Image 1 (cartoon, rainbow, N blue to C red):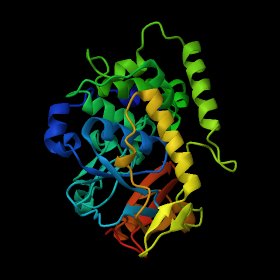
Image 2 (image 1 turned 90 degrees about the vertical axis):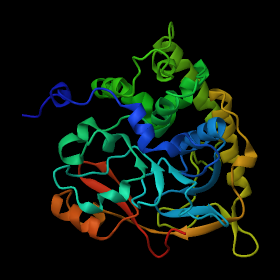
Image 3 (image 1 turned 135 degrees about the horizontal axis):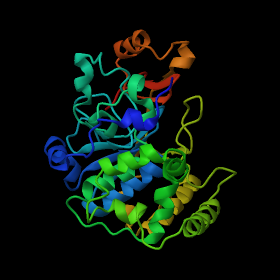
Image 4 (image 1 turned 30 degrees about the vertical axis):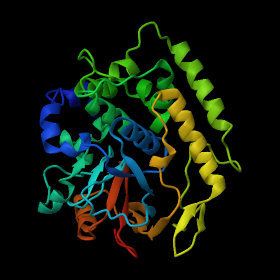
Length: 342
């Protein structure tokens, strides 16, 4: 018989130890770092947030198939951080929220490649085999807000609820998996007075109807940004077959994001800034003078593998750059070929 969520949650760690986390990952609170974003609403929110509060500069974008990176930047740089994506390299700093561990009872010595990866599921030792139903249900931006809010006051206006409920389908998850969401919010310290998460999920006198109205307004503004039928919140840098998308050649083997795509993406970032109150400093974002890197995207389904210890070991032997369990039956992964991280 399949156990209830409440049974699975029994005996779990109830609250994140933020002081210990900041000792282990002090760079998350440091100023003037460079960041590489996933090119979706969560990644863009993370870039906007860290730029606002710590002066971080957005120097690139990575979607698991390709990467666009500012000329002269190296991912080996101690000041470079991937946001909204786990990178399986010990020298690379990253923050993500996907399920990456298959079996906590069979962790290899190479797992130290995640030494510099700040990740909620790994913090709780959650794995796909035993804990997939308990995986982190929110977005990376909520995790960052919880961390930063322990040290800095963060203003979350009511209008910010729209993008913070929209990203990664959070508004769907809240009512579909309430037990798991509540458990994670308690883990992130929402019950503590002063937690900025309270301003997102515990607004006084803010009804479900009010939520629907601000979400409707947000969707209408987003839809005005649509370009050739594509959603306004989608920043496309690769085609489904891994070819580059929405880029134009510049001189000296450098590229830029196309003018049309820049216009759409900047419009969406401005919408995020307008609703969150987080300032959009265009000078802190790189859309030109970029170098292209191409990687190989694969999946367990594509290789006819099963999500098993045996086939996960095969994946580990391939030394993947990144991966995520997208369902209980599939893992999508990226190999560092033909290009390597600079």
